[in-house]
Image 1 (cartoon, protein in one colour):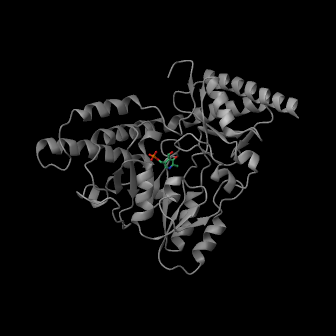
Image 2 (cartoon, helix red, strand yellow):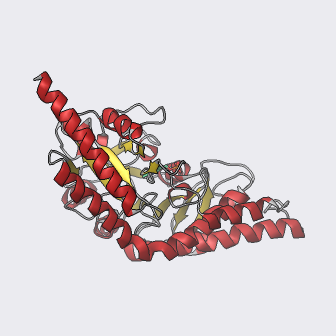
Length: 374
Ligand code: PLP
């Protein structure tokens, strides 16, 4: 990243924290396999178990509940397949939940972007063929909107079901206490909070029975076979410890995000913000210029030196209409055009002010062009 380019795509991936890099470099010097009983193996096991403690501490869990995986995608798949229960999922879940099973019963969200708790209660009241699992994410990756997870957990448990919560975007950005929230299974990904890509965890309460999806050597209490990614796990643990310490700075990010939104609203009043009136992550802004495609905005901002993303971009970078904005009942002109701006611990006021200016230039230029064409 050159200094003139501004990275505002932290929900896609955050930069590696210095402490995570150090932990990884140290771990790379360990030769042992954590499953080996000799001294080298025991050293590697110590690295993994130290990280396990830090991951658990970030989300108020027990270390023994942590099952390391190759990332959030695998952890979500393990939760929704490994419990073998009937699956209900909110209509705004990440594709790694919705694509992991074909037999999912949807639970709608309200126009606010928050799960419809009355509808959740209704669907669980029907006679069911067996025990259920409900998947509700803690914070949405496109809008940053926080879900009423404690309330959802109370409903889910009243019906004898379990709650799985994808906390990939929330962990390290807001306080997450798995026990206090009543979450039974929780998904984490290292690279969203300053750890490396390709490592994550499913944190699973001790009384939840789970079967492995990936079988083999019996690692991770038999729940996820494969020699552990020791360096990646070490980086994940260090990133969790740093993210926990940084939670006190969440208000700084909210202040910068709000500064951007009020600046953009003044300079380009046609800007529409999504989720600004409900609880949301402190670092995320989802915005659109009605009628303008998200890809046009992302490219114009990139040319101006700002990296943001279309909320619904897939791995090829192709922008699809957002299933999240559609689920909120927003009109097609917005569903096609949601752009996500996400900040992090190194974002500065100067960068935000430059971004407001760039947004104003782009919005007003596009508006002039549309007026001339009309
Ligand atoms: N869940 C959410 C909400 C996400 O935003 C992402 C990644 O964007 C994932 C799961 C997948 O995580 P990973 O990239 O570690 O597979």
